[in-house]
Length: 300
Image 1 (tube, rainbow, N blue to C red):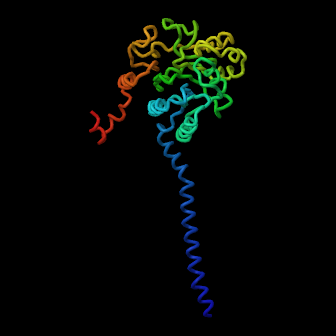
Image 2 (image 1 turned 90 degrees about the horizontal axis):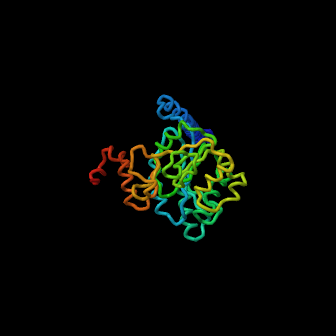
């Protein structure tokens, strides 16, 4: 009898604790499982959170490995922008790394930001980097975009106006940018400036498969792209976005003009004072200024 009583005293409390924790676990697990559906129902009640993106765009900024400071700055510039119309990814495009410091520092950037594409090429401007960029994309990225853009690292692109200008345009056989010569508004006359031009995905795939660009990769990269498309009878849909794309005032008498509100892209921003002028003109930090914060007392 004494043994039975001892067993009861030991077993019953243990069973009670076991079932208590089992109940607690089941309740907690169910709450966690239910949370996604709860979140979805809340989103359904608020349609503003379900903005449908109409198209996708990859912007590849061609730059050099050693330009760490420029990349960090551009991450700020593009990281605070978005568009309800488009799913936009911004990546930095480099050729093979050649220094130990590059391999270490850029590895940190990749781990932290995951926004760098390293191509199998030697760093260059007019010796095939743009060809390697476009031709490699279908093989090295895991998704298909409606559009792919090549941009310089001295251009400021306003993502919302860019997406708005693209919304009514075709998603196929498309070539978009700032047509050269500067005086022309006819996108079929020559080629789009290297400041930032855009191709539809089908043309990107064609560049990767055609012998026309593969056998002609040396020379001014933007001019070559126009030549490829002409030889291949490609880009029947073309759009030159003037005057919304232009060079910074005073930097190029032929292609520059004063800043305007409808700007999509400003090119040739080589100095910090030029960037400051552009960011102030477009009131890029207005969101901060519109918020009441102790920080504002330190901003005059």
